[in-house]
Structure formats: C-alpha cells, structure tokens
Length: 142
Image (cartoon, rainbow, N blue to C red; front, side, top):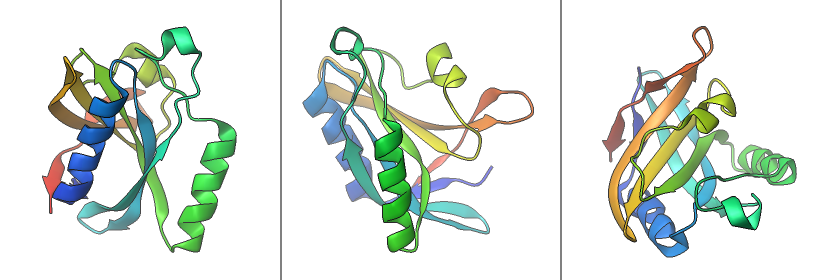
C-alpha cells in the first residue's frame, strides 16, 4: 500500500490538536494529492467535533456541512480530500469498531493516541472495500 507522506510540521499539528482537545477527541480533514507511489498531505483543517458532548471523549463526528465545505475547499486549491484525522484519548492509535463501521473506502484515517494529555503514537488506516476491514497504511515523514 502506498504510504501517506506528511511533513513533520503537519504531523506535529495533529499531535498538538489531540493534546489540546484532550480528554476529548479532536478531528479534522486531510488535504493533498495522490502520486503513483504515495499519497501526499499538503494541509490539514481542524473541524469541530460535533458528537454529543457526553460522548466526545471516545467518539467524533464531522457534519455533512463540514464535509461539503472541505470538498469545495479542496477543489478551489486543486487538491483532494484524502481523509480524516482524529485522536484516541488514553487509547491506542488503532481504529475502533465504531471507526470501522463509519469509515468509507478511499480515505486515509489517521489516528493519534494521546496518553494522559501527551502524544504517544500515530497510525493511518484505509478501509478495504472488499473485506470491509481496515488495512494499515504506512506514514512517511517528509
């Protein structure tokens, strides 16, 4: 699987957002473009977690309105919406069953584990359309 290539600055931005929003989940949109051998992240956009307040510590929701705005922004910048990122407060950086059920193929899903308010690990996942299971996508720092 082609790696998700991200700059150190953007990588640290995801970690920082996760730490800032802790103990709730942060979330945002990943923009960029696909190349023959890699998926390149060009920018990120934080989005408000619109899940109900009592569940934000272990769930995130990006509204259809935010997704439409992201697609419009991507088109204006000659980019694609490559996927989404979110944090797992005090949990590993691997997708939950909830994440899997609500995921769509094509998109890269970056998860940052925030343990006791500090970034611990970051992984990326893509939903395989045939098996409906996540496959881990390597993260490559640029």
